[in-house]
Length: 332
Image 1 (tube, one colour):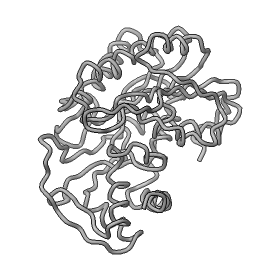
Image 2: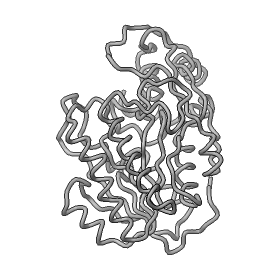
Image 3: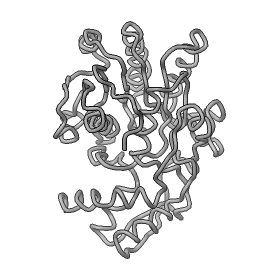
Image 4: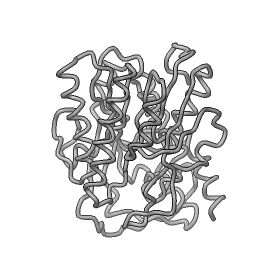
């Protein structure tokens, strides 16, 4: 679905983290709906390095970009030489998706450098181009504060990832306070799921992980007792928010969710309706920090961006299930 009428002919769009989950979906959105735009993907791509958790240090994967016909630049946003590659480009929009999004990473210095300092460097480059920046923030900025979650309230992150994203948003507030016309928008993603998330591995959505478990074992495991609630938002709606932010009349920070919390047990019921019956085992939660309830206040997002989520949990899973089955067939 095309979300704005502008044809974007002759416009250049830069996507950092463009080989990742959301970045690659953005790249293909523009290729499919705005073919006369010039789309450039910038990504570190993964190598053999892993964090102490065993997760890859980069979630970018070439397979997410198979079929993409735009330009691809390999680089690390922490590397000054690679940032010069971006500074040498002429672009009109930058969708900044590159980040360390693994919440288990304990290297606070690396997370802050990658998520906050690199963001500031990219913003300065974008400003020199008079380009609009739309960047990925996170519901992690709210920590375990009470839902519903509203921008400007309960911003109490519980890990360095959430803190780094809050620092990005705090910097944005300072930018907008100094210049209310500054073309910058932060989007606080809630629990995003959908196509092209497979290469996130252990950090992929519970919807994908539970779907694969159900197909493989005819049984899934949930933390006791599956009543934890999240605001699950389908990738198509996240793309909609990003695209509509391009034409928003003012800068700001906005939640991007469905606007209603659903439980993990609700995921189970929806998966059963698509995949057939399977068993559920409840286990102890080993984590000291675990968000028990998130729910995005999306009223400002709807008002200012024209954002209207189209996929509730059931319709999102129905749209996603064919890919979940294909992933299972490929790895079983």
